Length: 120
Length: 120
DNA sequence: CTGCATCTTCGAGTGCACTTGAAGTCAAGC
DNA sequence: GCTTGACTTCAAGTGCACTCGAAGATGCAG
Image (cartoon, rainbow over all chains, first blue to last red; front, side, top):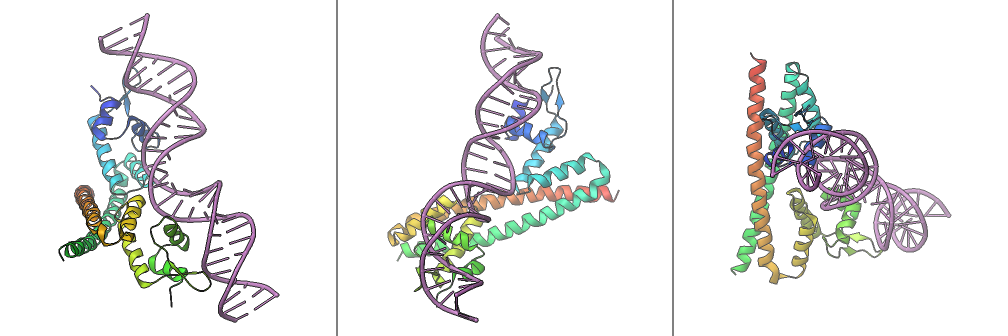
């Protein structure tokens, strides 16, 4: 019934090694085991992995993700703190987007310049 | 008249060490020297550094930057290739921005969810 | 029965972009 | 004359996030 590490790897895009690593450092909490002791991922596990991946690709350090995961484990009492973490992270991502957009306009300028050069 | 490495460091935001490193790997070509053999940066040097920094912060690998710098050194004949490099890089940056924007909306969703939780 | 995937723990290796430190020389400013 | 900042070369270290490999055990599928 559960999802094997192999499948979870394929779905999440993370290697089996990395999945074990994430579990070891506490990013994923207590993945269930089947009768043979093998990891058995659930749908919520995969959703959580998906969210973790979004945090990572948006540049949240592993240490912060661990902190967030730990708060989540502590239950609803930590909801406000988790929200604040996400809000702070959101701000950083927006800044990053703004910076990248600015830099793209410099690229555009340069590219236009090259085009002008080639057509002269 | 020239700009010392100290000033160039302050203006560019790169350490003196990094400036020497960039020169060593060919990112900056032949920075001028004063009578005492000390580096003397020019305004164009600083502008180039500024552009290099934009390439870096937008995620271009050092190796690609070196390639671009080399083409630039080869003169106008390589303009089209440089333009193509910038265009390809521009595409990658736009994709990155799109990805980040998507991820921000997931953050927004989660944050809203926390707000709803807190107000219930 | 065989073979493969999985499990555990552990330490070491990788890639990138610096960053630091050592060791010794040199020249200008105070 | 001494300090300060710069120069050179070179090797080693750092931080992050994996990534890999070894070693030995186990259990399910064909």
